[in-house]
Image (cartoon, rainbow, N blue to C red):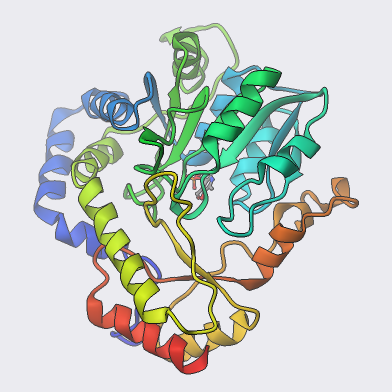
Length: 367
Ligand SMILES: Cc1ncc(COP(=O)(O)O)c(C=O)c1O
């Protein structure tokens, strides 16, 4: 690998920029002797609740667990259906499968890659108990519309906020609209741990209490177990790292927005379809995702120039071997089109202007 290679994300560069603060935080935790469910985790929960505007926040082991715990806390289970996009990471659907419910896939709006409320309505049945709205690439699914639809029908709204911490709609943060908001702090996310970590926000105190039990072996009190739970606790080292970075998140998200603006200017006039902000609130540019019918050729050209790119996601969930047998008749044209044409470009707060220019120059020479 060339030293000049431009990665798609660069967690090490972010950690290097914050090295002094991160090292102090890690040392503090090591010296404390408290490694799981301690003051760092409690601070993170309090600060994320305040940051998103959610009433409660409960740390856990990953974004996947956050989704799973949310569906358990909502008592979703066998015989229930959970509507969601197929254009998402598999964890969204796995959560429904883990609790014995059926994932039911709806199509997306081709302009924003997020759920199309019209398609959601068509996917609803009397068995629908929950809707998972995925805020893909850093901006919200149409929350006002989806929240109203869920409220009218008594459906639980779960937000998959793995890619959207800091995004909002009409000033109201992602993770504060639904009964639950599920966050991932996977190392390439906008708020990134140095390992696995996640968190669930909740509106209802009873849900928050249940989430706290579920993440800790179904117990309120150690060695007393009321329900079947899990070991999905947030550890103090990850929480301490996240606390350092949460204080810088707005600044880092603003740097991503500047890169997106520059990409937009420099790629204008090419044959690429550029990503659109929906205009209902803040986009945090977790990904900068273009579209092109010859996406694979463009990707090869970028690769030859030492520039990484990624396809999120090449195979939509209704076509994955895991879910295809149950979805033979399902038609999701906008989802299929997106899967065939999307290409995500490097975007992260430490990406320099020369690298941004190089990405655009290579793309403009072939698109
Ligand atoms: C949309 C979406 N949902 C869920 C997850 C799962 O999060 P994690 O990897 O922390 O389990 C991710 C991230 O990987 C994601 O991007």
